[in-house]
Image 1 (cartoon, rainbow, N blue to C red):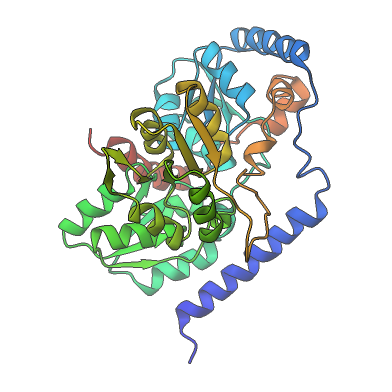
Image 2: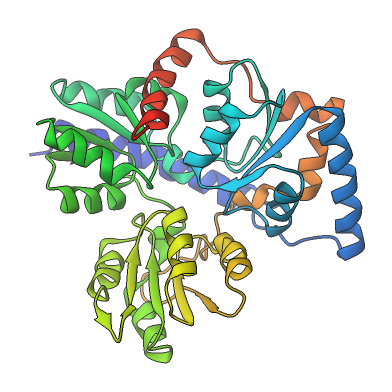
Length: 373
């Protein structure tokens, strides 16, 4: 007999599949993300953007997964390159009147929730997230209504409507600690939208959690057999895995968590935690199972080390992402510069948010920002 929960998940999956099919098969430019400029053009774009940042009293807030040129420019101009939690904190504290959020749409929404008085621009407002698409608010509301006695905790990779319904918002860098805290308080939880991250947290904390069944288009592509084969080729490598990855890949990294001649062989963690591990571990080579955009910063921090993308090939692979978020790749220097034009400004600005949604989402986001403070 089909349960109410099964029906909700089936409807959500159907909506998600239709959205993804429309994106991948009807958008001819979606995967055309190759750079269209040489070094001289890059420097010219840098100077033009620098001038606009000064004129508009703006600052760049970028994620580790966006194009390396944007990461470089953000650092050069006093902005930040970080995970979504630190992006949110930086944007809220920034003195500038305008934030240029280089990432995906929920990051721009988060910036607007935390700083409603600021102008929030994004290089492309169509840069969404598969986890966001995977959790439509209608079905999510039904999910919550089935379990009114449970505290609702959602991943930052979700819409403002989902955040407004939640009691807590978390990023992968604090999710374990928050759930562990709530579990210690005797709370029973609902978790959304990433099933792999939720499963990892549930296993680590032993919390009573019912999980939404979403997944990340990038991390779900990592395949355990292909990674095992790469480990055979580079037997001294450390394996760095983001917990949005499939459970067998996460368990593989955990199985390597042993000391062999004082070398840690596997780390499971958030984007910032993996970056820290890549700097601190003595290994000379690393296999990295997260979005390949992070390799720029890893190589910059440790130029003497070898960083390898975890393979997405092998049995069952579709390579819709190939370890690169296609929506993060929609951020380019050209689209960043276009934010400042009068014509583009209207279509690149994150709009003001409904007051009720703003209050609800800010309440759950404030818990994230202030946790451990």
